[in-house]
Image 1 (cartoon, rainbow, N blue to C red):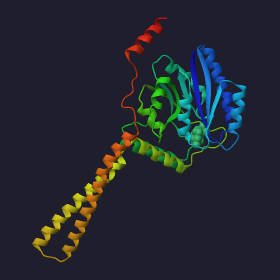
Image 2 (image 1 turned 180 degrees about the vertical axis):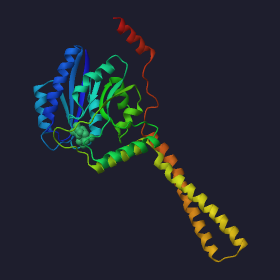
Image 3 (image 1 turned 180 degrees about the horizontal axis):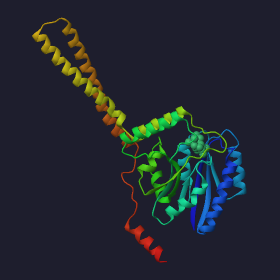
Length: 324
Ligand code: UDP
Ligand code: MG
């Protein structure tokens, strides 16, 4: 038997939760028919909802023993919800998906086909259109991905989503990243493993509202930059060095000029250059501090130094399993 855990973070989802449950039940039944080896658990994370979400979850857990839930003491955000769900999941495979049906459950059989033979460790979707989203928002999103992929070594795929079908091994690797400021799009990519993208058109919410405001998204994108890049810390060193060079060149120019044609105004300009030179030097030194800070920052995250995907023991086990 193979257990599939479906992790669903929920925040004020009373309107869509019953619809989601109905849809996912159909898909689970269909998958069980095709693959009798599969069993399911549904793990809902109630992220401090203020509506009837918890009451619905309680009812569902009484009626269906596959339903489990973890209810937070307040709203901790979707990242915390996903972490709690991955940590609480018991499955050999773990699915993370939204409750609002924007991650269509109908994709699950296809995703399972990609991971079941061990060809991929993760199947996920990639939005190829941003239908139903404002133009400004799409423009900012594209800009974010452009900047992010320039300044970070971790690839952040444009349109990739938190809709994932993963093996236990990948989930355990994600959980081994204990950092507090979590930016999942980066973490999923950082851990590596073989990921298969399925492209699809954006789906709109059937009910309820998105909890992301423009500023919320903006703050989240800054979170991503700070969590996966230390480039901003090098910024002041570069600016400082530039100012130093320009101030120094101008200073030399004014001194030579003063030697040739004495001019009282030049004294003032030379003083200005000296001041700029020292400001630049200060900025440059802050940048050097930034380099130490960035290294300390990476150390305190305690990220694993490497992640293993396979060794000979696992390979032998797999070969033995295939023979049986
Ligand atoms: N969500 C959550 N905590 C939050 C905000 C959202 O658990 O603080 C859940 C929400 O219930 C949904 C998913 O995260 O299942 C995605 O949220 P939403 O649909 O608002 O985001 P969008 O699809 O607009 O990115
Ligand atoms: Mg949504």
